[in-house]
Image (cartoon, rainbow, N blue to C red):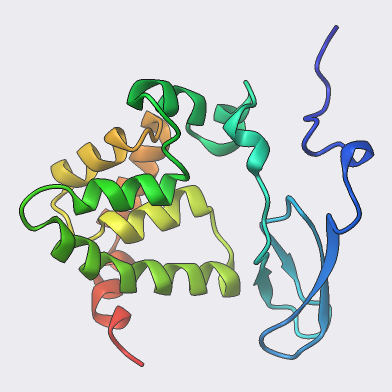
Length: 179
């Protein structure tokens, strides 16, 4: 039998509370979200609003997660011998490794917060933007190695590295410290 719809996206399996409203941080208008919507446009002001309760828990077991997310969480868990968590959490752990790892991680966290805020306002692919924010302070070979160690697929790694090489990426670290 052909698999035509992801069970996690099939509303027949959803529970009360999987569709909810979140106030827009700009104008306060209610924005309706489904649990698997990453962002939606505010009907009041037109801004992209990030879903604060995004639920992609099915990706931890689904055989099609790689097509949905750009990496295979099941393969990452198997390779590491346990549940490794989200891509962002795995990248944080990679940054924290080594002698000056904690300093690298502390330097990356403001970039991550800025990237998360910009995703909420402007949208974008979180599989690319968030890893780029975390590894943005590393030289390209070290960044690629961290992305690979965290289980990001080759095509998405390439997109992250292209973003980091863009002129816009050069301005992010300076902006991350501003209030």
